[in-house]
Length: 269
Image (tube, rainbow, N blue to C red):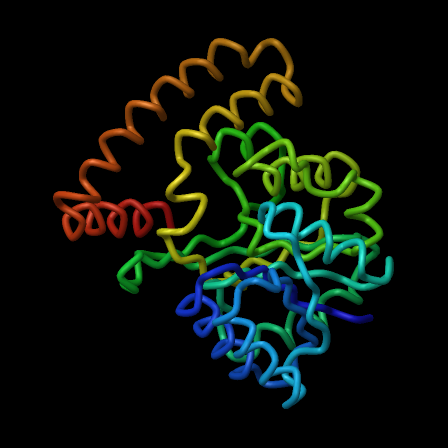
């Protein structure tokens, strides 16, 4: 079994260096591919150096048209039997032996994907908390962001991603959530209880909360039955108001907001 880590990066040197450090800290060598636009000159210099030293197995050129287009390019370039783990710029492994443990778990069972929990970090680097993976991934919990898994905590066989239709480039934020829903509808997945990845707030999904809220509303209408309609629109309105409040607090009272997040995650555990 081949486990390939894919990192999509564009104009994010600090985030990429964080991911690089995590890659190099693993207990065994990581098979690593990076997708990056040629025009991203500053990062290209770093990537070319890493190619020379052998840290990166393959460097894929991207048009810079969007993160999901870049992720699809990595899927297209992979062998169908390879397992892909998307840790984009800024993402990290949960521990120094995580890659090795996940690699060993891939051979267990006959699922074509696996999922684990994740650690949540604030934009300033503070630890906010961790989420173990749910006992199972089901569409309604995923699409209401209840007991969900993040794409950083998901590893899938490349051929399986292709069969599911790849990442939907018509979505800007929630295409990974849709792919996870598609996966769980045909394959229950292999569960790893503990966190396997670290997600830092402040990236695309954080900045695009309102877009994500609208896209998840659309996905709920597509994948859930009509009995969820009232709940879905109520949740959409609630999240929209909540997002406005959170964004205001992030600008004026970020430390206090992070304390609230820590409390909520601790209680959830």
